Length: 302
Image 1: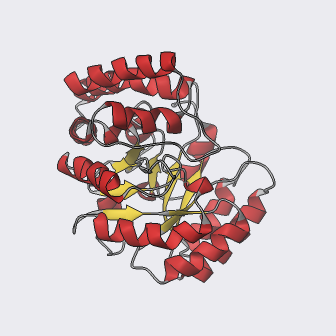
Image 2: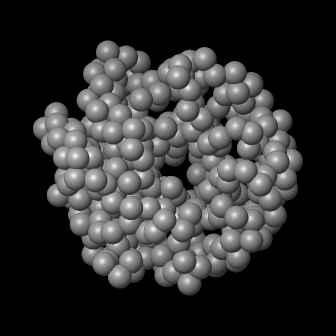
């Protein structure tokens, strides 16, 4: 596992894969199947793994957290950067900060919480988390109102943020006044697009973001990396063609559940047996699974 400080060049060098976590029928971690997922992603040229929402770390047992960190550190390749997540509740992330402090992970992402927060309160909570962890954090901006760009700038100016995952969904990604304010206050070279392939071209080309995260990259890491390279080469035609290939599976994720669909898609692709979801999620219906299966087949064949 790579443990060096994260730079803008590192963020731009790879898609940031956001994999699911495979589990046994008793809901314990399935090391063998998770290892298969990691190796499949790495074999496609991806060298950054972010374990967050798709891994459902929102509902991980406190007693499971440290063993999970130890597994991820051991399972990742020597040149692979792994970013675990903490939270979203304040008490949870503060206890998890103590565990993270004892590891070699260069950073950890704070999972965003909806409701029961204020922008100033989130800024304070992030400060407490970083102080307890002893290393800068990844800030995940997913919903509004969560944190204001001015709060973000204060955290960045104080050296508390490693990088920022921006994932506010817009009907038109190019029409985003919040993101425009954010890149005017914070260096866009420390911000990555956090909503997969679909808005990535606009976010990187028009807002200057440094890279993007993806869930579907877990199915076709090689193709997602080709899209990143095309964007960086300003080959917009190729990038658009690849974006369209990923769209059917992303459409199913948006229509049903990004986490649930990806979890099932990795199994349906034959990459690994992801097993059951942690409650409070449930499996796809048979009709949903059939549609996802067709999208997966098309993505693998592309």
